[in-house]
Image 1 (cartoon, rainbow, N blue to C red):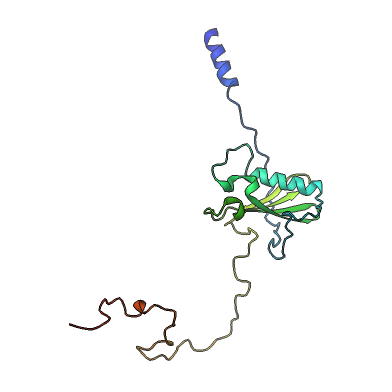
Image 2: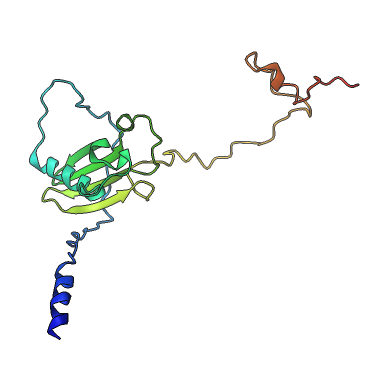
Length: 189
């Protein structure tokens, strides 16, 4: 029995357990601001000093480490924290962070769709809400803001004679595209 105890203890102590992630206090009533409603100020080589308070820096670090943990080995360029663009808006005790892939950091490689995320982080470091691109409420207003009116726009018919076109072909269209694909330009033998 003692012979089995030592290997069993070595086996059990050799299996490290992952630290449990902090639970996210999901607050669906929390609305994200429009991150792209205003032009963001870029800091790239401007030579102007920039001041960032600790709460915002902490929020940026929490969001970056949650989306792309630094301990993982990146397989692609967009899986690195330094290959991201970060936008943030602070409203009271909440810092809203938006992260997207920086196309310039990936040397023009094909980038994934829906690779960004938006976070609402309390100044104490708690993630209040997290939304990935493609999820409802992601902060990007993809639907048109004007849905039109309920008034009748009139008749939907257009009087166009059969066989006619809407106008002359463009001068920039190659002639070979206008013949319908016939090799002999429509002459019969």
